[in-house]
Length: 262
Image (cartoon, rainbow, N blue to C red; front, side, top):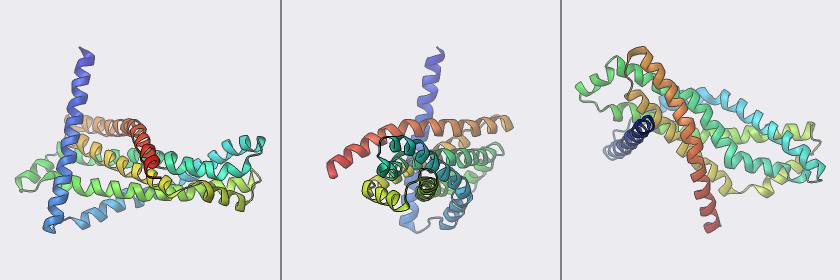
């Protein structure tokens, strides 16, 4: 009975998130066609989600790039394959590490913030007041957060790729005794445009997941301050689990698409 109850709860939440996503797309198209898209709200959310997360993702990118070079570099050096270090690290960063780690960092910082903010508004009946004022809550609250999170996660992933390769290059030169030219040539030889775009497509999907889950958890908050705390925690946990689960299917899809196109 417990498993059945949890399964029903999971399906209900998935259905609710899907409906919220479709409503977000509907209001986006409607606002663009009518010329009433909230650009100011979008920019404000982009600053909150993206600019305020720059330091965190930079530290993440540098550390991951450096660690990858250390782990791979010594092993490759023993096999006389130092010339492949840069390319392997670049592929790992572009395809998997950059989008996943950036998404996890943003989910912890931004997903929880969205859930807490909207959850507090729900508890204090501010969301109900929007309905009274003939303002759709999804249009006013979800749309700018959804697109800001989607756009900025792509930009942050680009940043993580850049700083990650810089960190990796520094470690390769000063610790693995590779030349900068060798490291750079390896990156240029192995990394392709579709590898970068595949990772950025993942980041875009992950950004949408984080925003929808955070908004949904905020909208469904109940039980006062304790409920806000629970929604905040749930938004982070569910978002990270969804990112890791969806990543597999995106990887298979992108790999098959690349094999067909290229």
